[in-house]
Length: 552
Image 1: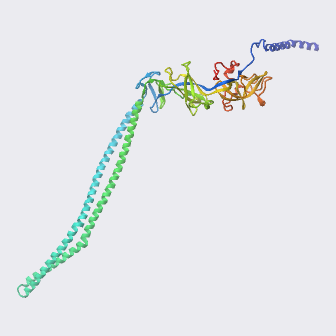
Image 2: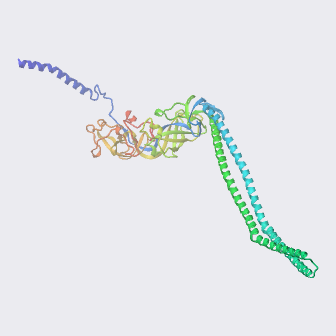
Image 3: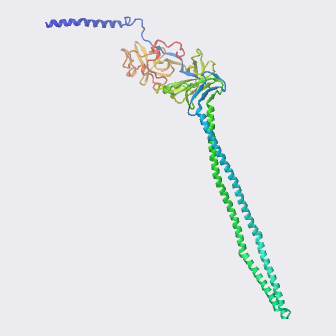
């Protein structure tokens, strides 16, 4: 019973095993070439031929047109203000036309208050100036009087020294001389009277009278002599000292008057300068307000077409557009009036190609709106620092603003038009080159996958210059060889090669397109991520229309 039961169980599983085996056989057969799942007509994977010929090295970038010479009109009102009126963009204006009017209500209120401040400061200045002028006049009068007093004192001193003193001495000597004469006359008369009285011709009384007269004359002589001595000893020196002291005092008074006048002048002059500075400051504030009010009306400085200024900033590099009612800050650009005499093309170059671009290089500009026409130009400038506005969108992106001067202008060109800029770096007359998709970077090597005798060889190559489509091959490949435009099956993950495929020299594993070609590791080959666009299409021959190596 047990054997029979086991045998029945085995028969129950047999149909399931046979079904699985049949399904596996069908899948294997359908996956063969020419079977159900893989059409027999699909050709095997092929690549591009290694070509020899001229190779044009260029940098191609998208950009926009910009006027070479344009007038930028900015908000010159301090702080923030509001746009009350804005002329429509694209309007053709003439010199003096009103383009924009800003809100200046607060400025008018400040103007009235400032006019009051100016008048107050002006009154203070005039008052202090008049007080200063009065003090100057008073100082002149005081100094003049002191100088006159000094002159008079000097004259009195000289008069006494040269005249009055001698006159007084002469009077004293004359008084002595007269007294001496009178005394001698009285003495002779008294002697004669004594003789007459002795002979009885004069009485005693008459003799005594003559004697008294003699005594009086002697006293007068002695008094005149004493007055002369006192004059010489005391009066003249004292008078001379007083006059000299008066002259010195007058001189000191003159100096004091000058110092006093200077001190009063300094105080008043400081007041005048302070009030004048206040008046000037308030006047400058008023003039500034008047200028600010005048700048609220922005007029066209020349004829041209109105273009709203490009606004920068805001979240993710976006900002509110210029329109009526918009708040604008000081020095913010509002309107530009481009010149129709010339245009420039402006682009942002990635840092990987920056070292190839130099000022003065020839360029070809193709404007999207003017298809079929090429315009020549040259690199005018390359920014020394990266554009910070691009960091908002991608913090790891570093691009440098580059201006290309277009030779000649076309009336159909307009600022803001999109264009393609091709900077011609170098033209190599004869070299080997392959599509840029055919070169891969593995560690410190550049590799190309070359089909050879039923296998795929990962061959190290030495690369040179490059453009968007082609890479110059300096060594490692020969003309006519085939290189794959994508890694062979089995190496997409970098885990190894297909069965039968050769490994690169040195036993290194092949890499994938996702590894890219590092610009810092392989000079001349740009770094790229993921399968290149050209690798997604036909991988048989190079793109058509590029016999000179410039690429499609």
